[in-house]
Length: 121
Image (spheres, helix red, strand yellow):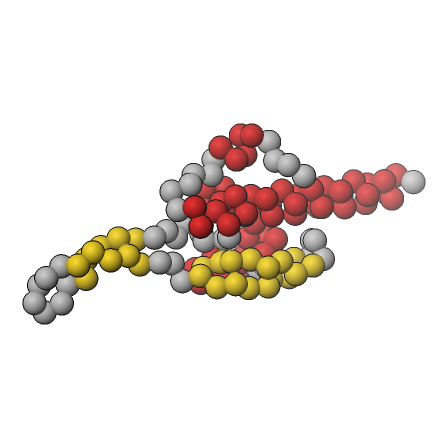
């Protein structure tokens, strides 16, 4: 269940909230708000985050995940959460993504081992 240490070392933590969901590399951005008077005011832009329930075919259950709209588009492009988790770079997944990836991989390996045992007997 617990991934090895090198697996977690790839994940960086510049924006901690992004580690608790699938943000696909999106982070808080900083800049200036500049009106007509040219008086600059510092401000921040946050990623467009939504709480979604996505069905995992491998795990056979709904996963409640915080994710950005960019991640949601990529999940649809890859054909589901399982494919997304297995194909994405670890740097873009974060802690939660890596935890889900390990769960999906373990379930797939267990299913493959069970299938191999059925074929042998």
